[in-house]
Image (cartoon, rainbow, N blue to C red):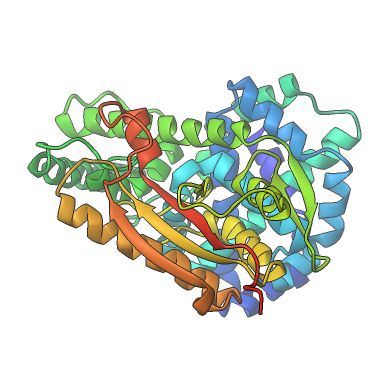
Length: 414
């Protein structure tokens, strides 16, 4: 089954498209072809891991409505040449976090490292694999051959055979890869124990998320191993469960934002945003002349992802940053403050520094997207101004946020 799905999906990639990808990324054709196969398999594998979640399957089917499959098929050549743009970019940027949650950047990096590609090439190949996969299932839905039940069954049936397409580890054999994985897990566990006095700060345990993403890919690519009763193997299973839990949480968070809708801005630009997302709420506030500027009115970003314990934004954050930049450009009189916040876990001084770095990075990204830096300020507040109970993980997650406050809505009168 997996061979059939993979063959069908990769069969949509013409020689010209492969060459276009290689040229755009500046990589060898062979490396790009192998990387695209791995990215496609990883995407299907991520979908298969959620195939029993009716909410996830329904969301995927929702993305495929309105002739999406045929539209994507006709756009594949242009996507290969220039990457996804417009509505296709919106679709890809919504789909990939649904599949990978906060692990999207790590999956892209693992593919890059496996095939000797740059980090940007790994990300680009994931963004090529996404429309390929959606185009394939979209065509099936258009023909009436795809339902929630059949999609789930198809993914579950394909999952065991996907290992032949996934990366097999740097050591070149399944046994060697398993050994390397166990060693990485052991090292990560030892590092985690050093910091065991405090609970994890971010969504996935900081000491082990980066080290074990390759393990996630490798373990799923191998046939079922004999049980190995070691602390490292048990911990690896626990980490995978934690990663899946985090990914499921991200999917639920996406669902809570509502259906996508188009919002037209004063300069004629249209953005595609979730109906209950921060962009829609911010535009509504800016359009409401009776809504006063207030230092107590804040808008929390709802789709920004940072690398664990770092101020580095993950690629999945680009969609929301672009939307916010378009809004600010359409309302040139608006000035904003960007606030960074953490929970109360760990050292307060370190939290304050990290929150400032993240706020600064968001401001820098918006500046790169065309917003005049003189219209923005950034400040880290650390663990101040908690909006939820820090004694629970859910509360701590809400307190780890980037927020936006409007400090001026209209130009001062002369």
